[in-house]
Amino acid sequence: VRHGKGKQTLADDLILTIEGTWINDYLLETVKITYIDGSRYFGHVDFAMERNGPGIFYRPNGDVINAIWHEDEIKILKSITSQNNKVTIINENKCRIVYSDGLIYCGSYDHHFLPQGHGKMMYPDGSLYLGFWKAGKRHGYGFYVGANRDYYSGPWYEDVKHGIGLCANYGVQVLWIEWEHDRVKNIWHGYDY
Image (cartoon, rainbow, N blue to C red; front, side, top):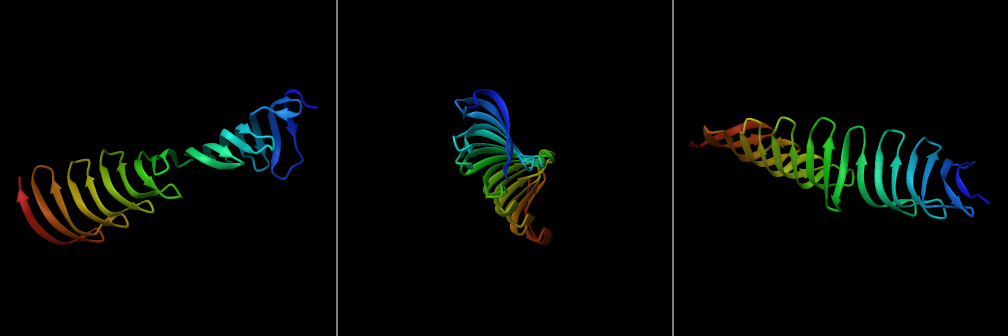
């Protein structure tokens, strides 16, 4: 009968070692599990040794998953950190993603944690996009303000301006411009400031 702190090595297809505190051959909730593939888990388990409750899972590729677990599956995802970005779940419809290159996104997301639906992207140079996204690209109606405070308000298609939109260079003039895949097709003069 195991009793007290210890480390157990298993002849298992999945788990290599388990560290924790046993009482009468049962593990207390918080453990450290090292898996055969090199991944690790720190958190709560149930009697069947499945992740159950709050815990952090470290993948061999560097990803870190902070979640509430139930029967070895993610029940409530709190955050994912990878080599490329950190995703923090705000609620089931909204997240915040901080990318390694300094971009910060806040808004709706898809199952791959790419911007999807409505959201806001802040760029390292101070520019900002507020609008609709599809599969991580600006797509649909959106408003972009550049670092120099020029702006564009209009349709986007797969991350480029496409359609008729309102453009303004800060403090000088406003133009209606028709874009075709990020290239100017027609210009209609608006007004000067």
